[in-house]
Image (cartoon, rainbow, N blue to C red; front, side, top):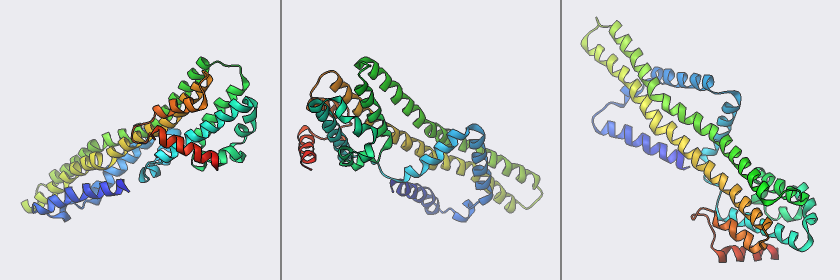
Length: 286
């Protein structure tokens, strides 16, 4: 919703200011210029990216219209789940969670937290490392190194759509210049026409440069920035799981291990110690 509202502000400010200054909005309506800029940008996007990058970018685009799903409530769900899992391990041993981590969707423990269960990447990350802990063949240092590599890989994969859209935005002003040059060529080829008609052709040519810059900095560029912010938010969940599990591996009680995880969250979503404690008690009561 904020994306659409932001676009409306951009359009209203630019075109409204032009109209208030006495400009004629009809002169900016140049579908041929848009065809040249948009078509060239789409072609360059296809040439400059492989199939994986194109699919990842197209898959990421719909997420831009939705707000952030990484709320305080979701993080409290995650930490309550971690607390219950680690508490079960502490009371009944590592083998007691084997059924839960092999089939989390059928697990009564995981089913209590639908918000976390809906994020299959986080669930897979958590269950994979719990499985390694159950095996007992790796120490905390080895698991931490493996976690760091996996989180880095996840981050690099998430950066692919960001880079694709950012490069597309960077190219828009150049394609606008191309459209403007084509308009100038057409104008010079029509130099024998009356001055009034010649002025219209020059104005139409300049619209290409205007549209290229507007599309780059008002529409495409901000999408790359938003995607990067969403990527940073998604990575924070993995870091919360990592820190909590490592604290447990190093011998800390579930309550302290979860506190380690709470501390790595952004301050805007981080629950207070009391809020998390109350949520955990309510979850255990359920």
